[in-house]
Image (cartoon, rainbow, N blue to C red; front, side):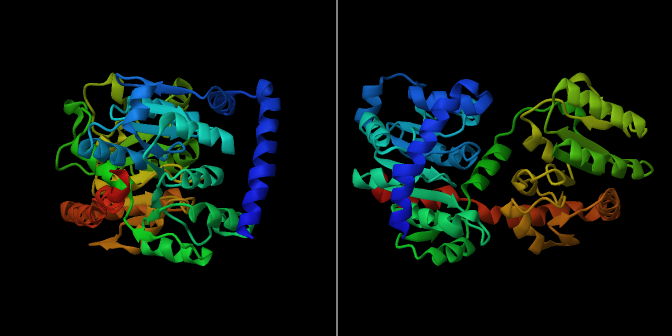
Length: 430
């Protein structure tokens, strides 16, 4: 059955989708059109000295990261370069959203748009670049791609893989395509034993290992190599600091009334919206003014007055700002899906999330883990819930250093996934 579904996908679905997208391309805009054009042109960019022929001769490590999955690939790329400095690293992407990140990664030698999942295009791509191994980051294992790599003798592995028991990849017709694709891999490195248990329902024959989540290694690397912040704004050790990170408008509609309720209780607040466009910042400031909340913009101030919200209007420093705080709220969880809770947890913070958090494995897992005064991750449904938790933590302020140390110790157990993955596949990447 799985083979039949694969052949239907290969000879009907993919060619039809390809033809349809070509016909619609002149009428499309944004990232979808950019994706189509990148694939059509075979877009690639060599970042370091050397030619296409030089890279192919050296037989590069090939990592595929669809889009945000590049965050799971970062520590793998870094460690590969550390262990094998003379072997190029080639990264492919599916979404153009990854291009900005790839441009900034100095350990990547060449990055390319992944070809269409058509047999002849994948064969041409592999012959062109001559990779020694293909590593998939998190997801995006393309059926034709893995069938071609196996046929051409290129070993492949999936790392930081997670499969929830309600995953659409394990249900209906899709499960057959998932089974076919994953069975063509050399190894699967899962985040947890639960993921392997869920994959067992597919009856896979490929070796599966619990290696953990490589993104934790990236988070710890970032904390150990922080970007510079404004030292003059650093709160004192005696301050109680609440940070709301990556918030959207839906989150802010709940957060701001909670902060209004807390006006009589001394604490410092950092508000870091996901969107830092002038229009959104102005709208946010108007909301705060209407509630009688004072604020200063991070980029425009040299001091942080008591009682003022520090409004972060600069992107790329949220991970560092978490280290200033004592408790966090993670945005997206009152909108559609929560952003990653990893950075806040790695900084030792107890975390609040709204009702829309089931997309995030860590948000679910750490609801079951306790620190000295409660769960590491707690779900809030209203402004009142947020205010109650802030008041509770404020009363326990003297315990916060111990609580943060407990959380850092717990989250630290997730370190070294990258080493486990690369140690396991070393036999096929040399």
